Length: 444
Image (tube, rainbow, N blue to C red):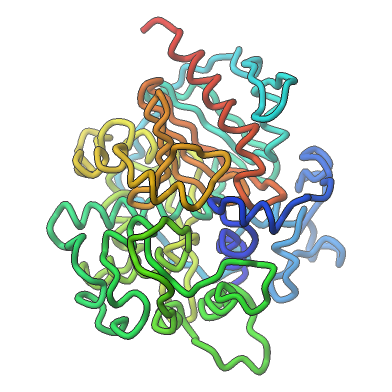
């Protein structure tokens, strides 16, 4: 019952939602894929029956749960396949999201990056294998749609969007004085003093500017990424496996390569270190922190859940599963300077720090073709565009996109065939901007 962790960690396994040219090199040229309509998991009948027919069963042990198109079902049913812990919303009533649907959004037109033929918003949903999308404008739902296996009361894998939740919590602990951004990791976690992280600062972990001997080249069977995910029981271990048995044990083995603070390098292993830092200074798990600091205060509609390793340690880099509207609530709180549901949930200074972004020069060294001029701060992607947009991003198309100028938040879950966001950005980012422009043109 641990299947969920492989695809949640698919941000590790194929091409991270944030890898640049490396991801493209490893996955291009992409083979032609069946369309979203052809791979609709409901129409295909995955896991239907008592028991399902043999050719409709999805399993963790044989790896079938993370093969396309089967993961179009898996992403919306993680708890059925993997070990998880719960993230409570508390007992208070959910916060309301007023509705003001706009029927003409489907007709919004834009031109995909690198193309000359326009596409509509409605067409982009299929093009991106969208499982669900909610758009908020000035705090009201103006658009909501569910496709594939995701329902309004269902939950979906957030993939690397998980990082932004814990990056926000980590930055909040810095603002509260419980974490020193300039302190070395070993000051808080002596167990890592002989690892690559021992002399890295908390800030370098938060902004992923650590120098690590850690490859996420998925074409290389000897890359460190495979050791990482096997240690966390994200992937099945071979019968002769003798490696680390947990996320924490693996972190102790990571060695340094180059110097910290010289370049941005998106490596999920940093998020597990952040999770350990959060747990160490609060004496509470990352799931407990997420529940107490965010989930129960936002007035979420549903509990969330998060995948765990064999020691019960949550996967801080990609294990979160949530309802779609709850994802939107988090984005709306970030749009409103950390305030929502009648209270200041995240310090305004933390949100300001994220919006201001990180070091653009360090980010540029990573070479993300669809994110020119962007940066990375506290595990958020900051676009530095005219609207001041920033985003949480996960592979296969998961996102929280916050556009402060347009007073717009987009929460999307998807099951795009290719992991890297570089494949769906051309039909996502211009669609978001076109919708922002439409909403900004409306009178108050």
